[in-house]
Length: 444
Picture (cartoon, rainbow, N blue to C red):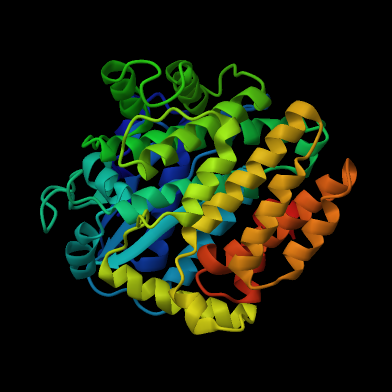
């Protein structure tokens, strides 16, 4: 394993800066040092970098800043030794500062699997990310293991729709997580505005990652999805009349970080897109363009529906129940067994919609809607079992101006801490949570 054996020609094909090839070379060298050259069977790059959709900025000093992740699957010949994952993570974590990358969005994500585990488990995880791994992953070193996945190809018919629909929660959550405090004051610094405009564009593009498979169309990459939508669906059929133009602009911004509309206009289009998507899913997949003004109606349908919007396979249901029980004990939930069994994702999505909707209305009208805060507080009370959230929001509803903005920040902060424990941290422990909360420093 050495530079002469690395397959990095795709960097030139996609026109990536030489720095990207240098980064990949350094990481492959780190893998060789930590795991041993002879122990590695294959290193596979997947995600936006392997598809030619890496997002980066070239700064004035020639340094590049990455807004996308580097994502790998590392396959070893035998089961990795204890401590090797941690050692490799430590080596990768040191790269960000050494490379001078300032973006909080950049991370190096990797899976470390033995050959047997990769062959058996990976193809059975029928997620969009796994589909893209086999469709457009690039083998950087070693054997090409992407030819014929065990269990056959992932299709729109056998896709894991619990995970697919879960992208709605994931994208609305990360958008809130990285929302700068200054967003409520119209005084965002250039770097903050750059990050939030990029995240808004990327979050919008995920609407198609959820929508198209439900229409029987499974394609890889943001560009192909936008092309499919604009070619096969008339304007205004499933989304509002300007959605085609908006989503095409989002793609351009994701790939080129080019010119963009104001944040408020983009934010409005984004919420309208997600509301239309949810209305579609809640109405037996009927076309249902939905304006932002219908947000309370969609949220009410979300929390009352008997539809299973997040159908999990059996093994992940067991994993979720086990994790939720531990989270309930960590949070001090009074009835951990009942809380563990309750489906919380629709209420979490509804909270996010109210939180984003409240901020959007404040940015448009300089008025934070009291009813949105009250509804969000009620949902947070149900999610966390802490009735103080609802009581405080009812008191704040009578107030105006900065008091409501402060209450919005308080509710969002409580929700962020809850979700980090519930969904993001590998284990609900204070140390794990603080490491994640550091990324969005205003939530600490």
